[in-house]
Length: 214
Image (cartoon, rainbow, N blue to C red):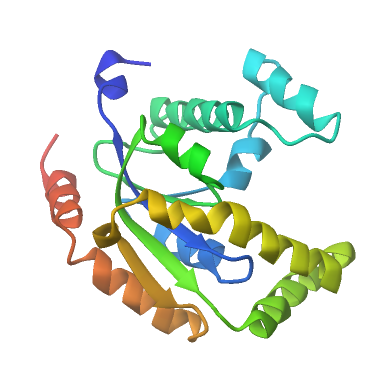
């Protein structure tokens, strides 16, 4: 990793919301637009090289059915981001990171502070638990994950979000948080996200960089 990149924090947006709120959907759509790079937590583990020391640590915990410690999760994330930058898939000088699924708790948010500069947290909120459950059940059936469609699993995932992930909102300044009603049609949610983004100074800054000749 170059000393230049290590001395700079990556500009980032975070998508936060309960399971079924649509953060993955919105993140993926935004990531199809040039100068936005969507990176979901699942990408960290799907692209894991188990031959590396970090990869072997991950296998050590997962093979025992244990949760991977926060410091290892963030280290894996950092290693993958660096690999993507080195291969020029992700261009940190002109791309804005779009994160969903990470950070998952306050400790991960604290660790990520060393590597990213958060310019906006999009909090997709859906107070209607029945609607969240309906969406989660529909997705589980679509992906043929029948166990995930049970009421018990759905209730547990929502409870975990409320206890561990939602407190992340208190970690960031109030002015960095945009709350959006996720019960709206997805296109309206996306419209609100984009409307907020184009009003941000970081968007103007990165857009100018992207149009400058190299």
